[in-house]
Length: 106
Image (cartoon, rainbow, N blue to C red; front, side, top):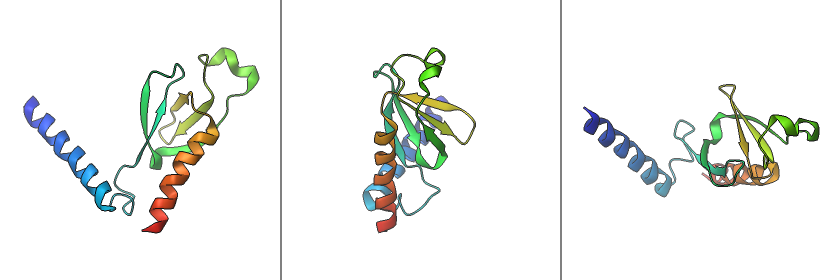
């Protein structure tokens, strides 16, 4: 059973890569488009679905005690969770803008 699950996810992953290579992944909002960011320590890699981002903001200076050192941007997701990143909000917006430009070209 476990082997079937691994094969299933491998096929899904390859379909996503193939779709991106052909340019169809950006035209269909039902297919994942992931941006690659890093956790507060800069070592943890996080991939975020652009369609699941609800808002982005910088942490306030008086809230430094609430977050780990190195948090420069908070990405709020549609499921109510947030992802602290070491990238600045400006860098995150640029990553999202690249996606939007490519999607609009289709």
